[in-house]
Image (cartoon, rainbow, N blue to C red):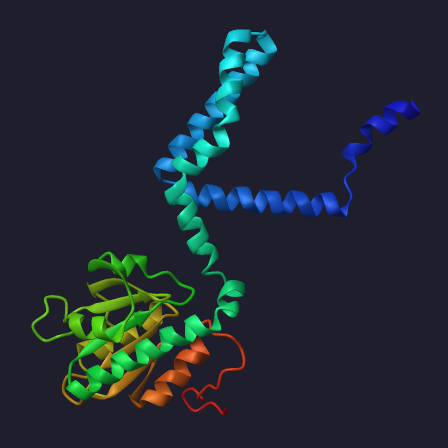
Length: 269
């Protein structure tokens, strides 16, 4: 009886076993999310089918099939690296967007804000109207689909090109995710709430509308007055300077701690 109890000891996991199970569960869950609705899911199902076939060959003692599958599995790791290369690259890219990694990438994140501020200030000096939506936690894919896909690294020059008066995309919004311009010419929802300032045009109303529906930071450059405005959480601040804009972005975007920030909408610093 004691021997049987010892054999069943593994059914009583300790806290380290529970931690390992939780980590493995999270990893498998994230992998399934990554490959969902991609060709990688079909390949994964194929791999599971081969594993099931190998198990059947072992149970039924099909030596030929077992030998073939064993030879195939010997090179399975190398084959997986080749077959799943795009998905692995996407997974590593998403890993680089986690808060911990972004915390370690202070220099790169700061350069992103610098480029954004520089581009907006240039548009303001040139009197060119613009609207830029910067994604935070809430995804903006739904709105990006209404525009044209760009998938280009954010730069002041590219913002100037997109919002140039004769550009076919200058009337819509630019969607920024991380350091990438995901889409241009996107259509944003107009606010349904009354706006006290009658001078605010469509861009400003769209900026407020998006900020009401998501937690995005929306930057507007007025074509009439050249002033910079920022909308967030359903509120808009008009006449923002470059330094003020930088402080807001450092406060709202996932920046490392310790950077100087500006007070927001009457908050004390």
